[in-house]
Image (tube, rainbow, N blue to C red; front, side, top):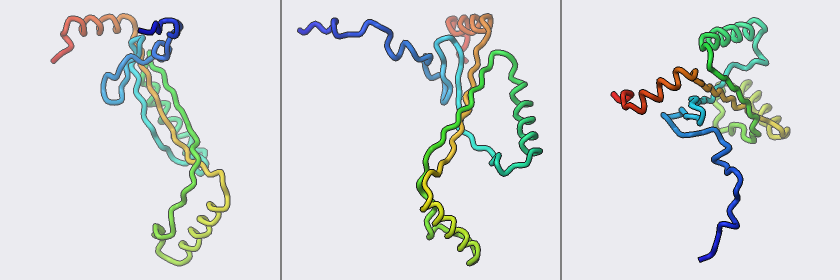
Length: 149
C-alpha cells in the first residue's frame, strides 16, 4: 500500500467553501445556515425602447411586489451578455410582402457584416433566511417528525 496521506491537502475543500447544503425541492436549495434559495431566468421588456413613464411604472410595480416580502429576504439580479452569431435564415423569413422581406434581408446582411452582437440573459435569485426563533421551531418539527403529513 502507498501512503497517500502526505499528498492530501489539509485546508478546506471546495465543498467547505460553498454555502449549499442540499436540494429541498425542484429549484429550491437549502443553505448551510438554514436559508432557502431559489432562482429563475426572466426576460422583460426592452428598456431602451420604453418611455420614461413605462420604465417608472415597471419600477413601481416591481417595488410594490418586493416590498411585501418583509424581513429576511435577499434579492440578487444577475445579467449575462452572451455572444450570438446566428440570424434567422432566409427560409425562416415569414414577412408577407417584398418590402418587409427586403428590410429583413438588409438586417441579415448587416448582422453578418458586423460582429459583436450579444443576447442578454437575466436571472433573479431569492434567498430567505428565517429568524432564529422560526428556524429553531422548524428544526424541532422536523426532528420530532411532525412535519410529515
